[in-house]
Image 1: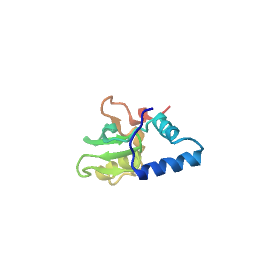
Image 2 (image 1 turned 180 degrees about the vertical axis):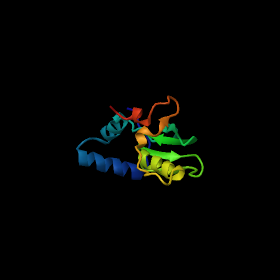
Image 3 (image 1 turned 90 degrees about the horizontal axis):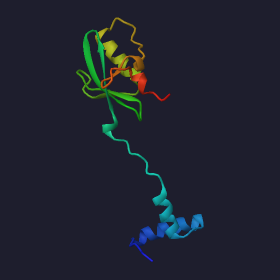
Image 4 (image 1 turned 30 degrees about the vertical axis):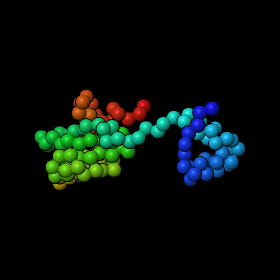
Length: 124
C-alpha cells in the first residue's frame, strides 16, 4: 500500500479529525482530496469599465466577486468604492457638484469590452 510522509504534528491533526468523524486517517485525506477546489479571487477577474460623463471618460474596474468598483482615472487613482453607485456618485459630484449626485451605478458604468451597461453582468 502506498504511503506519504507527514510531520508528527500533521499526523496528530489527521488522527484527531479521523477520531471525531469516526473514519480512518486515509479517509480524511481522501475526503479532502475529493473536495471541489474553491476558486480564489484574483485581480485579473476584474472587469474593465468606463463612464463618459460631461465629456470626460473615467476608467475603472468592476470586481464581480465583491461588486466593488475601483476608479483608475485621476483624481481617484485606484480608489475603491463599495458599490457601483457609490463610484458613480463620486464621478457626478466631481464634475457636477451642483447636481443631486444619487446615481444608479449599474446604468452609469459600461463594460469596456462590450459597451453594455454594467447591469448586463448581473446574474439573471
